[in-house]
Length: 131
Image 1 (tube, rainbow, N blue to C red):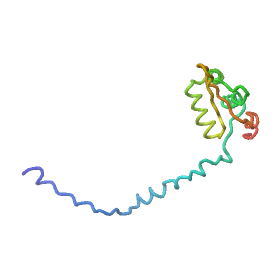
Image 2: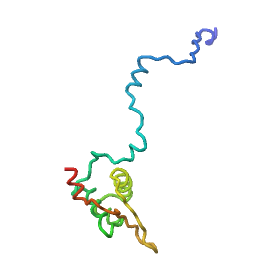
Image 3: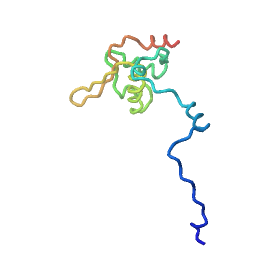
């Protein structure tokens, strides 16, 4: 006898899905629906602010100056690599802390300068809020 003849056929799967205890438990453990865009864009009331003596606090303080800061100055201050500094500016300062970080490049091959526009809050004010 061949192998195919001795094997039993499996019953065909039905087209409808049945609700099992496992599927109910899985659906109960899923997180709630995603937040609306309006809820995500509003600043969080209890968002943590960096301390003034942290690297992030020093970075903010330097960017709030009238002259702003170059990438070289920011990497020297923090000891971070340039891609890390740019990531912090984009992800933390702009997106999470909602700071208006602007960059401009000097004409004729000058370095890019980053600054926080309209810096109403200083690093010490941010630190006082978090305390």
